[in-house]
Length: 226
Image (cartoon, rainbow, N blue to C red; front, side, top):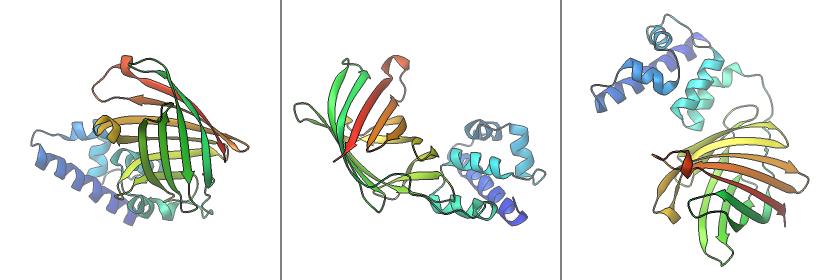
């Protein structure tokens, strides 16, 4: 990274560490390094301006800090080759079926409607076969940097997830989602999307906070453009 970007990023890291310590005086540099998934000695050198921050390290830290899209783009844009931003999600209305293969209540099928607007806004409506709504959510896709990275932003403008497009036919992303159907309980969700012609094949995993793998839910979905 260039010196100006490095200094700005170092200041951002120091401010975040200070903020966490102000909330918990026992919070340490070692705990901060563990949260960022970096070596504590390396983080110490970065904060003391004894180690430069590479672009790959910056992108790793951005992912761990869950920075807003605009800030992430600001910190990395000058180090990326100029490329056109590609809208990897094709707009349209999709309909299909899903099957949750592991859950507390056993496997269950559901219907799914997915509307993707030209703006990148997605509306998702998920119902059981009897019409009961089990998931009703919406978010916006934001491409803050050149290339294939993107963010999901909820209706309040809060970044709820990050993803990377492998190519035009494969996408992987993950995010935290508070589902009103489950009294606002927050889940960690990871999904893959594979596009084949007019169809989207999706598979995902959902982890409930504070629970072991026995409560892990997995699902698969197939949707076709209406």
